[in-house]
Length: 247
Length: 221
Ligand SMILES: Nc1ncnc2c1ncn2[C@@H]1O[C@H](COP(=O)(O)OP(=O)(O)OP(=O)(O)O)[C@@H](O)[C@H]1O
Ligand SMILES: [Mg+2]
Image (tube, rainbow over the protein chains, first blue to last red):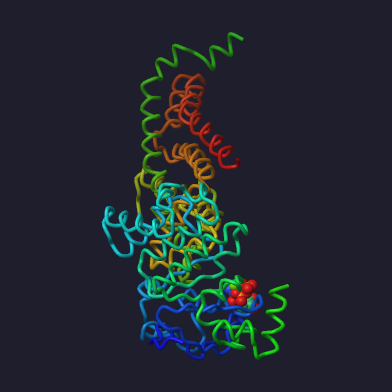
């Protein structure tokens, strides 16, 4: 395993919604450029964990350090924190009233204060990166699901985040469109992006990830390199889950 | 038959009444120009406040909206124009009308915007916030454009109601269209000016009514 400095450290994280304990003491680390894969049954807290990492949720207790900074501090500028952490959603969440280019440009203009020309240049560059230069002027409803998701990835990338979070990025896609999104993610990994991915694409996890974390009921059951988790899982829970996942 | 023509469609009287009717129509337009934009703007403020994350903002606004939606607009207007003087506040008829319309319209437009805002899934806001936009920026650039588009037919319908309600200003002797028509009627002992007023309203509102039903059809397809 690579000996790189952890860029993301999660320390004994708890999250409670009312009387639901969604996260119960999550501790994990991710090094720069590593891809961490979160797997686990529905309701195990995978989304909750991601959402804590860009502070869409506020953890009940525990700490999250991004590049050495504690982002769970009480009086922290959340807008600045989020700018450095990209998030890709299952349902894309593109802005339907803006073109692909417009979607990417919005935060560049309003958050980073770039000029229109500058923002446009960056947007085109990022759309090229996800293979969509020729779709810059298209609106979301004129794009396929796979294309929409790639625009959403470009939108996050444009802010040059330190970490990218993916919450089931291919689950809403027709099977034949999954590949194009995974290809972009693979390429991001090769470019050295740190990524935390929630997904059911086990084959992709095997091929591309550095760590696989198996969660159940808000806790980490087992974590390790993909070969270990997929081929020689220690915990009974993991084995059952993987058997069911591979039908 | 002749009697009906004489009483309701009397050309001589219409010509006679034309200048005063035109002036009244102008005043109605003036009211619209003040009352519609101020209501749309006030409604926006109300909607932003009533969808705020902070309970101490949401609450008082919800109560005020309820109150102003429950009071009949005419009662509100009379309270302001005839009631406030007892508190030592004397407003011109025009100001009284504008103020009562602002309160009433902000509540109504506010509820329409709010329905529009709530029709937009939280995913849009989360996507915006995850790129570092502030809650306000997300509202202005991402949520509102979609929300307004979704409730455009309702905004237009409500605006039509507001235009009709400007006739309430006649009650406080503000010389808008209906007041002028009624003046002309009482001077001439003839109903033709009232028919004229109805025609003016028709000319003013017919395009808006067409627009409203076109928008409704467009959004439902
Ligand atoms: N906003 C919320 N309010 C209340 N409970 C919630 C909320 N969001 C999630 N939960 C609960 O927290 C627990 C963890 O949910 P979470 O969405 O993180 O699971 P998940 O692993 O992402 O599941 P899935 O695979 O179905 O997406 C579940 O029991 C869920 O019902
Ligand atoms: Mg989830």
